[in-house]
Image 1 (cartoon, rainbow, N blue to C red):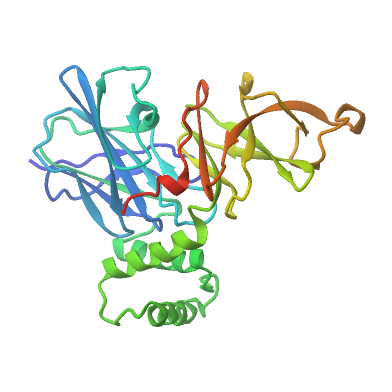
Image 2: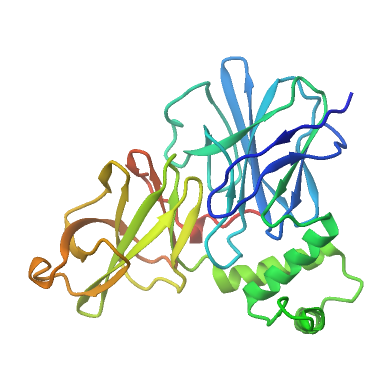
Length: 345
């Protein structure tokens, strides 16, 4: 018998939840948000936890997360927004920490393992989806304010990606629909997409162009821990050392601290959380303050009314994009570079 459930999970950087919808087969995940989402699932199998990802789900669509008959009382789900979107990334998850990778993965680890056993895997915060031993289940990801229908989510997703690319889509005024139509017509003409191109083809083209505009260039800070972190960066610009902060990064989310392609050998990172002001730190000194700052020069911090802090170096030599992952225990080695780990399509 098909079942429904309502499970609301707090997520970083956006108010949203997990709610059940009509199930089609096995375990489906539906995307009723304006974001292109990549999802990962996990479940227990004997003494091991199996996790796999990533499945892309366009706004308004559903994907099969587990294709066979369900046999467990609970499964685990994590979702993140595509790197194509501008602004802070969004994540849908919960308190259960399971292993994942930046690229496509299928992992088997002991239940309750404190680490993932491989350098390129790391713990991420999954939400528990209680199916109560139902053979079929569907979970729907939403955002706040809620989009009322899959069609509304699909249209909002197209609008968001057009904006990510740089088209003017003014949805705050009555002329928003005409602005959207004009922007979409220009995009179709630019990409030589026929009018009858499928929605899948349209989202593929939109994401490809948005990735060129927003990622993989730049520097992102990803929080793989279970509490908010605050991060600051340091870099050398010409002969001057410059520090900037703070970026607040919620658990399971990433913040894009630099959006331009990297052209420097090192970026220096400082990360703090409640109770640990040296979560990520190192020997290279920069000046900081307790409030948002941009400081040129790292000399005489105290005399300038500033505080001196040690930053850790991350190697960006030869890369135009980089993602620094910070766990509960500090910087995760080796760091995974965005230019080498583009989100799979």
